[in-house]
Length: 304
Image 1: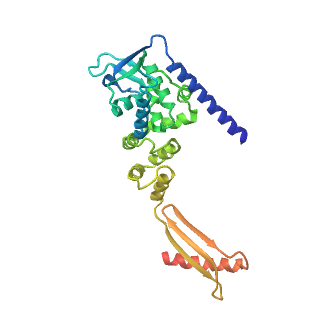
Image 2: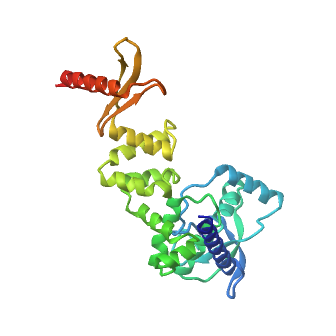
Image 3: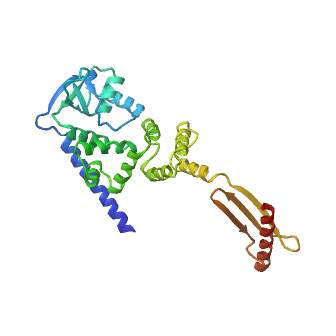
């Protein structure tokens, strides 16, 4: 057990080191790069950007930090585009910095590193930058898979695992997000942490059993803050499927009228259960068995 945990920890460290090496190779100044101050309004958001939400408080803090240091510490990374009447550049990395100076500080221009690169390199840069931040949800990570494969940046499970810094098992889970129905995708686009990789397979199982309506209802309750995401959300769905249980509790007495046991019966959609509680000592098992048998016979006659 200990050796298995150590092996998994070593694998995670190895993936993290690979991701750091990739990041250094991407963000270091490369031949052909040029630094230039460009208009914020002429920068287009990356079509490969997986992030669907930003922490506004964190952006405000970043804006204050930039203002206090009298400028952006690190230039954003862009590539030039042609044929677009509204934009001259496409953002590759640094969206938080761009939003902070443009929307919070009202700056009209920003220092940028302009790079010549194709789509495969562009999606790789966007992926590596986002994965460097711990708040990226599993759903947002899954949105990187299609562009990574389509551009040829990472086609196989092994290459995707290396780029995304995840195990192949996690990549399998991320793929599962791509088969979700539109109704759930709409929820995740607004609240990307609503369903995590931990529960994606359970979600798929519910969908295969035609419980989409219950999953949608649970997502709505979470969004309305009437239910907590994660385990409480899926426990709620399970309760709706099994339905409420009718409970009956019966006291079992001996010939002297003393209570010798308590029998609790619960009936639900998925079956029934009987629980018998007895004192630890002084119990006549044979007599109790006869009394339980008699009681069950009487109850069965009442339900016929």
